[in-house]
Image (tube, rainbow, N blue to C red):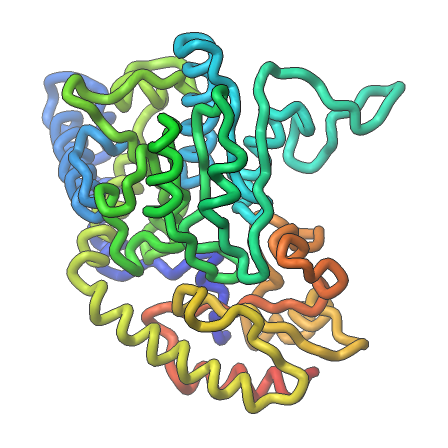
Length: 397
């Protein structure tokens, strides 16, 4: 199997697995328990991992809250900020995002906007469909340009005196477009608006420094850079008094500074910490390799008939390549199913199974969503893998 769907998930690094195993076998204590050694050892492991994750983002340990992944982090941040701002900060109830975000952001904002109640159904009743409810919040969805990039000017135009938060993706998970988060943060802060960045596809691959980006919040997941699934973090910028108030998403125990209740998954947290440590150690080397592989596959793709790489290199992160197969009889779902025994690729986000890509629609390519394929690389990908994929592609389109 040639695995080229790393934007969905990457393989777990052997060093990460080795670091996790003791916390599944011997050190199985609950870090919130008291006094005995297994609890103390688990608590120490969590804090060591927290320090490693914080270092990856140039943050302090207290600013890292462990979650189940970026989706939970994004929900926590957007809902938490909007709820607290509405009830404790003068009624600020407005959030701004784009129409090309990950579903974790898009659907949170649609929910707050009263458009949906679940992730696959419009708000409805037995007597009327698609009715909008008033949850007391408002969301604005900025249109992106033809490269999937958000304009600072459009953000400025969307801000009102009720805007509490702006939330944008750093590296787009479907097409690899890179947003200028620093510029967007400057605009937001000039209007006393907080900013959240979804850095899921950037974390561990390129430098992500919260101070340089100028963000107040970020979301990340371990499984995008060779860590385990089911673990991520929310970065919450501290002030001189500590973490700012934010409404909890999960209520219960006082874990994670009272912001995220629930028993901590110590083995996953340790794996996240190890993945962060490895990412910092090997980032330059791995990025150089991914760039070389990206250049190699782009050259190969350009030699194929009917293939177009539609996001230019200067607008996207290396390692995520979206291509358009320009044939009237081509269907990406049928094609991927046909080659699934040999190659793992995707039509886009793993969170958008069974429906056309909203990201591709946002680029003005609504009629071509069935012709898009996403290829994504990892540090274990080889040129031989790419050659085999190109051969499979050429023989099946």
